[in-house]
Image (cartoon, rainbow, N blue to C red; front, side, top):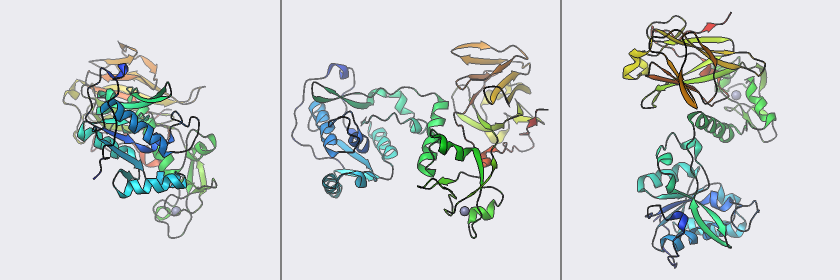
Amino acid sequence: MDEMPPTQGQLGPAAPYLADNPIPTGAVVDVSNVCWSERLPPLRRHFPLLDRLELVCSAWRRRYGADSPLVLVADNSLRRALLPEDARAFRRMERVGQVRTAPTADPVLLELARDRGWHVISEDQFKDLRRLHPWIERSPSRFLSWELRDGEVRLRPSGIRRVPAHAVSLAVERKDLKHGRHIDPSVAAQERVLRSHWRCTARGCVKAFLWPDRLLDWPSLARDGTVVCSCCGFPLEEAGPRGTTRLFVASDARTGTEFLRFPISLGSAVQLGRGDLTHGVNLAATELRPPEDVRQVSRRHLMLSLEESPKGPLPFAVDLGSGNGTLLTRGTERRLDPGERIALHTTDRLVLGDAVAIRLSGRRYITPEEEAPPSLDGAGGGLTVLG
Ligand SMILES: [Zn+2]
């Protein structure tokens, strides 16, 4: 029993701003998001409150009828965050199956809404889950948030906007670092952790055994700000600054399906093309499962590099005189001249021979493991260090 039993309610007058939406059959409520919302009464109180959930559920029933089912999904952590009285009420709801909980509610509630064709009630944009749930951008009208009008809580479209691919990468990375490692890259003192290599000297630590010189993945931040091993929890030694690396993404220009990610570190260049390349990446290597029309890519098509500039490391692209050309999308589309060299923006898209699209990943921090160039069987993957 996971559906909230319908309670008394009346079908209110249709709100004009929802009139174009299909009549929903049900909705999944992002309980933690609702309870924490400072845009629900009591306003500007930064504390999770169950009363807010009731206000939102009532708004739904008024609008769509008492029989329209609601499924409530909450993060496990909400249980501990609530005030004692609310926490008791919450546990009662859990016991009778009125609310279901998960370590992270987002993936659970999105799956439910997707499979049932239901609405989602949340202020969240779910940026980090856009890749897993492409239907979010196809069905923005299924996402509802709330507003207070004349003292009454009403539902309205939450305003799901399309998120460019590089912004999705950035959101995923930030969430991984924050939840997995307790490192918030937007806080300068914490971002510093990502700029260094770290060494674990703890005896018996598996990661220290595997990587005695420097850890190949991120450390964690302890509550007191100490940088600790994500494997054994032992404080780490700093092992020198990390170089700067940017990730690039290659995808099928027609379908958008990604087939390769590769890093370029500061002062290095990589040629992209088709066939055996000594200093580059063979986009036609069969193990990559490239798009069918990859043969339209020239043998030496494009060179990408990451170079020092007064504003910091800057990625560049040069068309190497390719047969079918390179199309640059930067607001409008234009073809690069053979030999033309451009500084790449994060939102730029390059299309090689109408077949392969190249863009920068939005990620800023690349683990040493990911810094390794792709190993492609007899087909290049080498890096050229700029002289
Ligand atoms: Zn360790």
